[in-house]
Amino acid sequence: MRVVGPTQWVFYPALVAIALTVLLATPVELFGLKLPEPVLPLILAFAWPLIRPSMIAPAVLFGLGLFLDMFWGGTLGLWPLCLLSVYGVVLASRNLLAGQETQILFVWYALCALAAFIVAYLVVTLDAGRAPSLLSLLGQVVPTLLLFPAADWMIQRFDDGDVRFR
Amino acid sequence: MAFRDGPFESLKVPLAWTAAVVTVVAIIASILMILGDRRHDATGEAYGPVRAGFDAGAGPVNGILAWPVRWAGNATDYVKGYFFAVSENRRLRAELEDLRPWRDQAIALKNVNGRYEAMLGLRTEPPVAMATARSISESRGPFINARLLDAGTSKGVRIGNPVINEDGLVGRVVGATGGVSRMLLLTDVASRTPVLIDRTDARAMLTGDGSGNPRLEFVRGQDSVQAGDRILSSGDGGGFPRGLPIGVAAKGIDGSWRVKLFSDRGAVDYVRVLLFQDFGQLVTPDALNAPPLAGLGAAPAPTAAAAAAIGDAAARRDRAAAAATPATTPTVPPAAPARPAE
Image 1 (cartoon, chains in turn blue, yellow):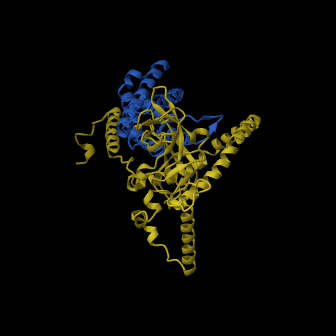
Image 2 (cartoon, each protein chain N blue to C red; image 1 turned 135 degrees about the horizontal axis):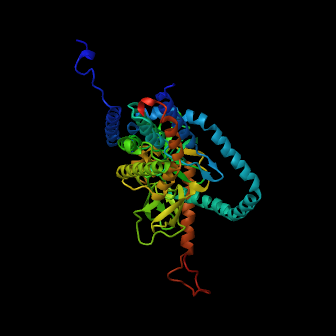
Image 3 (tube, rainbow over the protein chains, first blue to last red; image 1 turned 180 degrees about the vertical axis):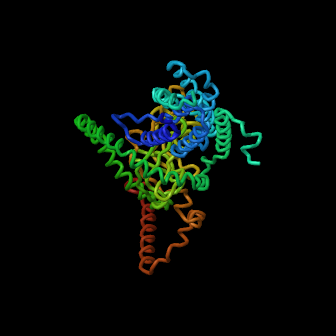
């Protein structure tokens, strides 16, 4: 049996997330609408601990968070903290979530994403001395929640890839 | 004794525990990084070589990856231009009709203003050099509103330079490398811009909050803002030149004063970086500290011909004034009332 290694379920998805983030940052308007700006690595922060526990995944998530901070020009350390918080919570609740239906996973994903955005909101408010607009926050939360099918696909695709982690 | 033969031979740490340890260490590192972040410092050192190097690499990579998206954007613009050409033409004609009288008035006012400045010896600000740049990437979320520009220190761009487009002020440069610079938009949550209300000359502070319309805070004076007032940069603090157009005041749904930005009228694609740092850059410190009428003492002595002309003109003026003054003790009664002196 072919063992699915970290290259398949960690490095390739991380590279895809980076490429899509760069792509969506292009300053163009399509028919008067700007491109959405979801936090793509949140999908990975949710899916990776459910696929299997690993030391590589949180390290790569830390790198992805730093990439977001550097690329978007935000406070250094903001997105690593949010992504790893989600990873930690899902890792701790792994036994509860294993084998659950997609609807339950979506509710958990939504709660984790909201928690991550609340952490980011608080950090930015303390850092900048002003609370960001809630409407603007919704503009980033909604596209991120709509990306749940990608997380679900990853879990389905890689969950049974290695029998040692069943 | 080899390590594998020791008492730890059969010790197996669960994988979830090791993952948890790495996660906790990474979270602690993240918190330390947030505490040590100096992004808001207005110094070049705060930008740091790591961010500078990253931006220098991100610019070209984004240019390659974003090519299909740019192509799609241009294609939609082309389609929009094709279908809305007639209505656009009508709108532009109407706007042209409105603006023609303003153009003539502006030319006349510029002429009068130039003469006043010359007569009063005003120290006007010299024109500021500019560098044209293209926006190559954008972050538009609630936590950061910034753009990467494809012009850097090689074109003279420095941290703090204001950035404008054809409609008005867009933001300011917060990081610069050789070929790429990062611009913080007026809408960013960390952006603070001193502004004035054109109608009342009242001062205020424009503060971004991640939404499209930044707030107008600390407005000086009672009822000094009305909906529709034009907002300009005030130049207070020396960060921006005075008078850059920013937007129009409007009441937000939360009751606060907000500004509809002129720069939102179209896509911010090509921009111009004003190579302006502060007022000290525009004049030498000696000239800035000189007394206002010091220029008179430095005027060259008049030539003999000029002195004769000045004396002749002064004598004529004196004679004309004496003739216009009515005599205090007339010898004969006047036939008509004397002209009043002007």
